[in-house]
Image 1: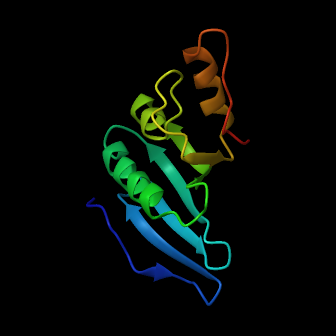
Image 2: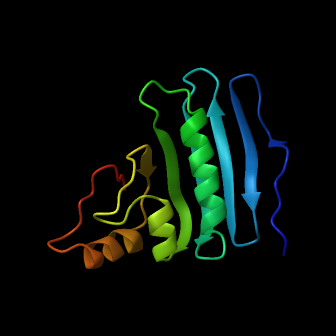
Length: 131
């Protein structure tokens, strides 16, 4: 199924929700708060080598256009059901490989935390993660 990028979903004067990407396996929805200017990218589905490049491009663009003073983009993983190494890399979560700490990851699923513990000598550095 080809990826779909769509028009705003719902929305109103305070909040605008819009589908940025949907390939049938991963859906990325942006929820921009017009009051605080803090964009939240809500991810759902599976992040893998088939869609991680596109997710990386979306995250890079969000970092550039973030209006928050500290240039942090909030990424909500509550509805993510699978992440492979390419997904961890694009989310900037691989230990020792962090390029920029411009992401704040929320609702990190337990399976991602376990994977990070397995990949990290001496345990998981959970800086920036929220569960």
